[in-house]
Length: 116
Length: 113
Image (cartoon, rainbow over all chains, first blue to last red; front, top):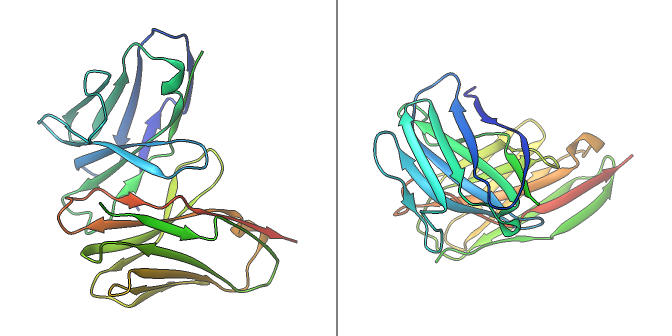
């Protein structure tokens, strides 16, 4: 099956720093990638949708200047949390679908971000 | 706005029992519905995907049904095992939302030996 990886799996940073999270499709070309955020005991909330080579589409209430998304290639999308604050601490999960993915998405293993 | 609700929020059963997890959604104009498994601190594993035109899907001990008109889906797990312990998430893809998914909060399942 299709594999999506995320790096890092866990990151701890100081308040005010920026953190970059990578999402890679390992064995298929991802025409669309999605970034979700999950709070403890809460459902996954879609943050943004990115298509390769174009600007990401952000969901209402998500600050695009704070959560920078780049989808520069068909196998890589990055999420940069700029000037991170403790309230940005969360579990971030990406998913990807390719042109031949049929009707499903493939999810990465997630990145646990802790901002001190 | 699509609301996805999962009941119960948590469930504990002894090994060997058959069990049913419920998912309801408010907007019946869905493209498909998907059940996922999430282990603590991990990503999502897709279990079953049901297209809007389908009534059910089966994989091993898992069976998922879909009643689009009533906005309900169930995940049936037969002969539960301790290894089934995880959080089960239901997600729907709306027809007009592109490929993004709307998730429920999940059901946390514990199967005791």
